[in-house]
Structures are given as structure tokens and as C-alpha cells.
Amino acid sequence: MNCRIMRLIQLTMAKPMHVLLVEDDAVLADGLARILQANGMLVETVGDGALADQMLQRGLDVAVVVLDIGLPGIDGFEVVRRLRSRAASLPVLLLTARDAIEDRVRGLELGADDYLVKPFASAELVARIRALARRASPHPAVLSLGRLTLDTGAKRAHIEQRALELSVREWAVLEYLLQHAARVVSKQQIIDAILPWGDDLTLNAVEVYISRVRLKIADAGISIRTIRGFGYMLEQSA
Ligand code: CA
Image (cartoon, rainbow, N blue to C red):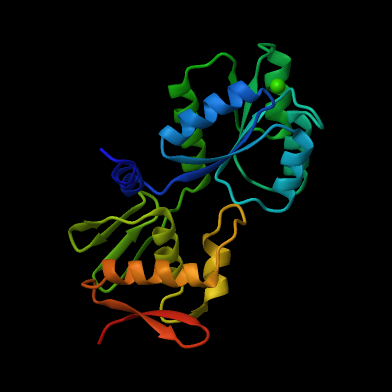
């Protein structure tokens, strides 16, 4: 099976969850990132506490933070403390090599949501991350227009009974348009909404995603109207 098909299958199963992995042991970080990616997650890895803190301060868009305690820069406890001092509710899973009860208690008291003691089974890490993400979004919305339904909790899209296969970015574009149905949105607004890590995405790329999404929703009784020189509007077809 080629990579493209594999990836498509992965993406149609669920919209990938974005995870920030803060771990200074490069070998461990690499191994964990691979495991999470194999489980359909998008992983940003950072090996320094101060850098992780900066990224979180800038409002990095992730669903869960997996945070080692012993880190260069500032330690995991301090990263959590700063995060909570900004009233951020982002779920945090602490990783610790230390089995000491005091460490777990301290982490939880500072506002971490859960912890895992190294070494742990990769399946447990994946399950804990998923559980934290689920807890953090208790009210997933079901968005619909025309014959299209987007279940943002289950991350499934349907045109009536037929499942719709969408890539990560196609999903993000469609979800954003649906959230703003019957309103005009600019290309820049779409870019801002769909970019997880502030990677570079051109206005032309947005056009490409829009045209792919258009093809996929052609029989959904809705259409994406181009507002020339500005952006798009999702509306019910006449
Ligand atoms: Ca460490």
C-alpha cells in the first residue's frame, strides 16, 4: 500500500490531534513522537522547558501537552505553573522518571492533569492523551448544512449516509467555513484558522484546498462561493 493511501486512511479515521511533546532526551522524544504519529497525532517536539513555555505563551494550538519534569531551561513543574498562572486550561500530562509520591503530588497541585512514570507502555501514553483531550472538549459540536454533517467530536464527515474522506487541512477548511456559514471569510482568516504551527501557507494554497473541498462536497447541496478579491462564503445551494 503506498504512503498516500495509508495517510488518507489515517486521516479519514479522525482529525489528527496536535500534541506538544516536551522531552529533552532526544532518543526518547523521537521514539515517543513516532508512536504518537503512528496513532494519528501531529507532534511538535521541544527539548527545552523555557522554549516550551515561550511557545505556550504565544498560544500554540495544541490539544494536549506531554511534559517531562527534568528539563534544561526551566523544569516541567515551572512550565505547568506558568501555564496555569495564565489561566490556560490546556491539558498537561507529566512524564517523570521519578517514582516519588511528592513529585506526582506537586505536579498535580501545580495544575498538571495526569502523570506517567517512566518507563511506561506506549499504549498507555496514547490512551491517557486521548482521555485528556476528550475531557478537555466535553461539548463537541455537530455542524451541518444542506446534506453535509461534520461531527467535530467523532471527527467524521458525512454527506447523508456517505462518509466523506478529508485530509487534515481539507477538514480544517471545511470546519471553519461551516462554523461561519453564510458569512464571508477572507483567505487570511482561513489560513489563520487552519495552521497548527504557523507554518508557511500561501493564499494560493488556500485556493487549492478550497477547490478540493468543492469537489468533495459537490453533491452535498451546499457550495463555496468565491467572493472575488477577498475570500469565500459557504452557503446552501439554491
Ligand atoms: Ca528529562
